[in-house]
Amino acid sequence: MKRRSPAITSFSGLRAKLCGVIHLNATTRWKDVPEPVWNYTLGGYQVLKKWLSYRESALLGRPLTSDEAQHFTHHVRRIASILALHEKLDAHYGASV
Image (cartoon, rainbow, N blue to C red):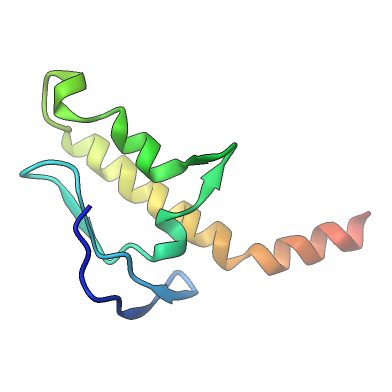
């Protein structure tokens, strides 16, 4: 992943620094992914990084398909939505217990 100077953006209601450009290979990259989204972990694993690590050309023997690239983009949006709703989800859970 190459980094550039961080900018501030609003992504699905999430205001955060951008982590820069995420490069998978010579033809596939994503830019303006918020840093908290890139750093999001489940079970101790960085979700987006782990997903991409299993889809490197060296492992698959082929480049990423456009459907797989779109799937990754959807993951970014879903994680951003979860993070944007985090306080509301915690409050709802707290009220229901």
